[in-house]
Image (cartoon, rainbow, N blue to C red; front, side, top):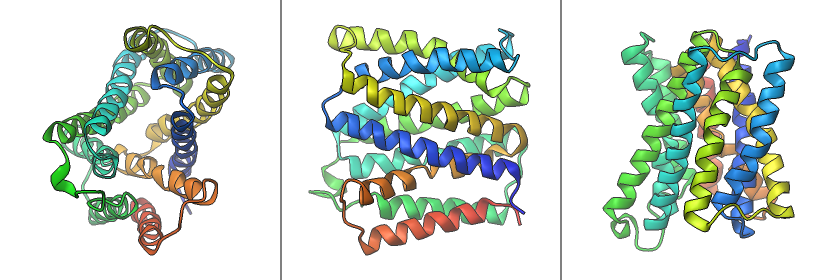
Length: 285
């Protein structure tokens, strides 16, 4: 029988994957990242606050302030990833960014006392191989040699930020903070950062009907997905939950294939199969 925290991690994987797809669709429609993040935060903060209140969990305690670190790491991860893509090839920088679960797993094993097993090792290798295949790593114009070193450094920064973000979620969950309240704390700090970034980068958010529509979908999906992820951390090991959640790119790839008309190549099919195998590897026997 699949443990409840594995099911929660799978829910997080699907919902975050949908959010990633919609976010990419918004960018292709000309909605700037500053506007998108600001609009999304306008939904996310009141929704998480209401959710925490209805659960009777709305309380600003010391562990809740971990949301400040979560909000900062979320912004830094997104900003560093955007910088890496602007300086290099997305087909190279994206896999580096998506391997952030390795940072989380390593930190959990080294500092939280979680065990390293053969199944986890196999899961890491399968997930990395899946990312390699689905991203078309090394097949862009000019290959890896054309990527600037600065692009790789920014991608590594994004990977580290997201990796440590998941450790913050784990610490908050372990301290007994309700998922909705932890995410509300994160969103409260993030909204100030998002509006500040929009102000500096483009003179402020440029709200539009299309922006609000996309932000509503991503906000709802992220709310459900991150809540499921934090809930999974309350029962499961970070070195198991995180890699499954990071496989959200599989959902994005499937949506792009069947909704946006992208071609389902043998390489992409093999990548999806390896991703499924990775999930099975991280599921306790």
